[in-house]
Image 1 (tube, helix red, strand yellow):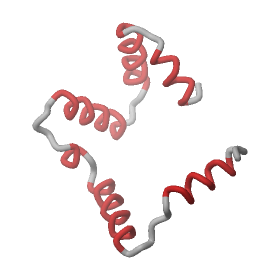
Image 2 (spheres, one colour; image 1 turned 90 degrees about the vertical axis):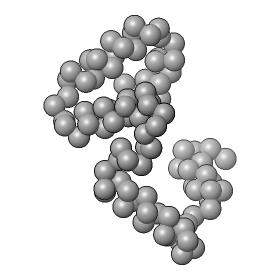
Image 3 (cartoon, helix red, strand yellow; image 1 turned 45 degrees about the horizontal axis):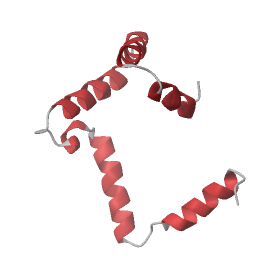
Image 4 (cartoon, helix red, strand yellow; image 1 turned 90 degrees about the horizontal axis):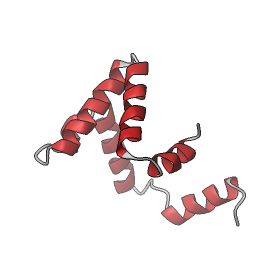
Length: 93
């Protein structure tokens, strides 16, 4: 199922259906990376005292820091440029 359709279908379901779907996804994966991220995400959501930065990997932190440094160096792409390109790729406008 396409991610957008999944989001729409989850918006139209009840709590039990969402829990069942999440349980299915968790049971069907053996990827420890995915399971660790899901666990960290839930822990972050349940505790107001945990900073999300402390739940991401060193690789993710480095990617964020690299992006911030690129922005400081003027290497960013303006939002409107990205939006225009996305619209063109999607056949809009």
